[in-house]
Length: 182
Image (cartoon, rainbow, N blue to C red):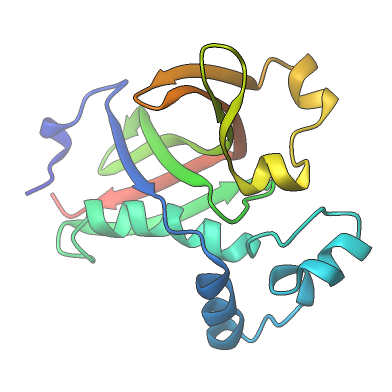
């Protein structure tokens, strides 16, 4: 059960999704009626200057609403009142999409959150000598820009196969309000 007394300022709820695929984008296009080809055709997306397909904005937004609906157990403990977000960064095939909401304040039965949706885009894995062992779509298609590097968004970390290069970028910041039943 979710109660105000169970929550604390600074507490976070989170979900992760690592299934952004071309098949998912095709299925979403059919289900939503948003058949804009920048979401389903690399050729069209490239002609639009995107270097490859991008996920539908409302698809990634759906993961934000899912976070709260899961937290509230589909209305059992309360309801989602409002979500306000800015879609700033593209979500791409192969991205890990992490959605976090942090409790900021309480007003009666309402809980106010800051929301951040972050994408993790794998570029490549290199061995200790700098040789590419594995290249991901982002590396093949050149998704990472000089601007990403200048902003410090491109990072590395050790993984069992070698050194992974990836981009960590906030795609969607915003706020949300829920109202609890008790």
